[in-house]
Length: 507
Ligand SMILES: Cc1cc2nc3c(=O)[nH]c(=O)nc-3n(C[C@H](O)[C@H](O)[C@H](O)COP(=O)(O)OP(=O)(O)OC[C@H]3O[C@@H](n4cnc5c(N)ncnc54)[C@H](O)[C@@H]3O)c2cc1C
Ligand code: FES
Image 1 (cartoon, helix red, strand yellow):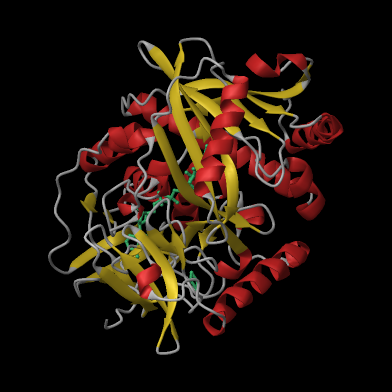
Image 2: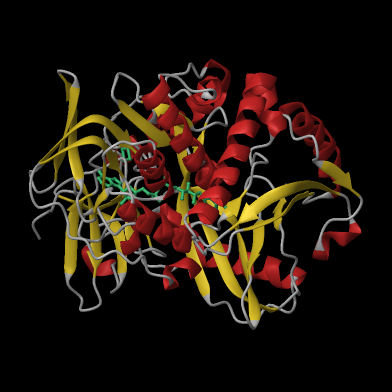
């Protein structure tokens, strides 16, 4: 099970990944084990198998059923947290490495599409930063300077942005990309099978131990996979309790998609400068109409209960700018992790020699996932990577200290919620199809009533580190605000870092 079991359906999920393989049925020995079959894991498996390694990939749910199925699929090497911010926190070298690695990631996706004949609507298009308000224009000037310093030599100031934004200045970033993420993963899966990798869906890993020069991974069914190297590409690493999770914060973000006449919206990536959550816009071209895809309205996971209002605002914002927009066909949400010093964690897992990880995706996890795959191939084959300076998971985060302290104070508050009052006074107050927190025998309990009126009662204590989970009425699941775990109404983990189910509570 994974986030594919959350309620909303993205535009991409209309395409199913064609893989009929069964879960792992016995023990297995392999040279490299990749855990997680999203863009990060499948890209890593691809790099390693093409480099001559024996590779097995496992996923606890459907292949490609994680956050990659919920993305908006901009392939950008402009930094969504801004080069200007990264430069002031971590210096120009970090910006240069970021730029170079993200360019390499988009190049690599394009190359793989060509070499493996993957038809996934990949196209190079322009990206634009547009000011959300007049006062942001000055900030764009600083960002352009920082992007040039990072190596983005042909980023440029334009007097008019695309489409609706033609009345004001913008920054233009050439050579960005877009694709259909699940068609791409489908193509990768077929290529991996052709190149001899083994793929096992519905095979959760619940334990990982590095010892005596090897790594043993234990599956939920009690099987052991023995490997020389393991890549944890589970979006949020399940095998570490603390080191990474205190350095990144989970955010829910929302997307709507609907038809527009062909050519009514520009074929470009557009991001505005709105704070705290920017809008992101692109189209998916179609034969008769294009589909306009607009995202935004982010909030910290578990800290909002007004999804209908957020989606309503997103639609109103879009209709104001694109009056030709037809009925909204898809509304969905997903989660991203925001690292407190603006760069993801890609490379050797802290405290390990033979375990690697990819996490801290921010809104650019497709390209950072592919950059991570390139890096891990280098680390395994060559012992080092050109980009470790900016992405090393073990780096000191001193310069992101203010954000770090704030995020961790939030986690303490969510843990302390066990001691606070319940959201609903009694189980009777929970209508069918809804969930809420109640106190039963003095313990915070996550209660959900299904359409037949039956109650499902679970401990509200997240199995990662014990914070109180919150009801997500849009996705009909339990979200942990501390480090971003999600659980089904039956308590099964859908998104890490938690990998154990919520404890059942007797009625
Ligand atoms: C709404 C939205 C819009 C976005 N827009 C963009 C964008 O425009 N551009 C961009 O670059 N990025 C974007 N992102 C971010 C990007 O989509 C994600 O960062 C990226 O897809 C994550 O890929 P992944 O492979 O790390 O994780 P996933 O796709 O989540 O894959 C991880 C896999 O690991 C599996 N797994 C987890 N735990 C275990 C375990 N214990 N055992 C076995 N398997 C396990 C899961 O089942 C899952 O399939 C967006 C994200 C969202 C939610
Ligand atoms: S995700 Fe860490 S406590 Fe829930």
